[in-house]
Image 1 (cartoon, rainbow, N blue to C red):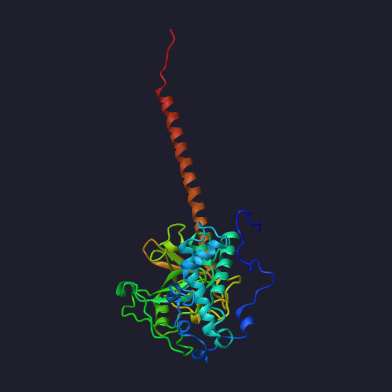
Image 2 (image 1 turned 60 degrees about the vertical axis):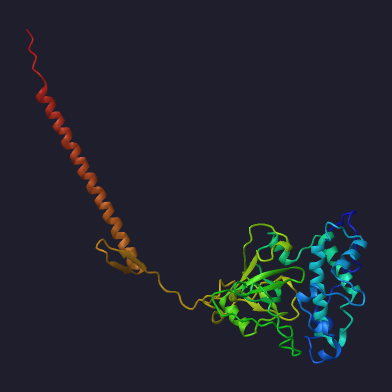
Length: 372
């Protein structure tokens, strides 16, 4: 893809010169929380998406506004690197870098969440999105260029209480150092008829999601938590009427997800649209009220013969096999032919009688003329 000469390349990382490593290749394994209290600061321990938006580097007193000025100084356009754009990406960059330090404290503690890394991430995202025109999964969905029913991997970034009970306020629990409780936020709903709301992100943008009753039960059991990756398939949008910007969707557009199309993703799965087709859902895993099933596998064990049911004039029904139905159809056609020929014969007989009657009438009515 050619870059317009009026656009300035900001990042030295993109386009990549070598193939990128995934988390498993780079870190060698899943996260470890054994040495969390020894190597990680309190800001990193308690960091979530909500705190990341207001986070400031204390030694330089630098926040989202200062990073916007840095980005503009590097050559970014003010019409593209707006305050909303920078604040949004600053939020997800800070949360990602802090989460990596929390997940791998002995290796990267104090090395990822720095001013230089955040600025370089902003430059990288500016080049990808503005200069190269790349868009994330959620942005494509909001702009109407991709279907929300496609399979994608999203991360739970926040869990909200029921909007009609607590006015959409975030319930934040005390963060434990234990792996199972790290970053978890509990949710309790007294009315199961009201759907729960969570926030999902693809790492670039976020979108509120509405859960069905079955997923709400999983949420109450703490099987869904902040930071967990979900593979979502067959979702739909609620409240979407046309292309909309990312900063205009809050409280308006929601992603409706169901348990039949929601699966737990691996810790190292990349966020965004999936390039492969998902596995079929087993019959024993299908929930009755869990929404549509994106894909399943069916085996034919027996083929039953076709049966035909006919309603008689007196209101009774007769069930026939395919062979008996064929015979009944032949008899029906035979009766139609007999009725047709009978009516034709009667019609010809009536025409002959009418012809004879007219001829007789002519002979009777002809006057006798005598000549003189």
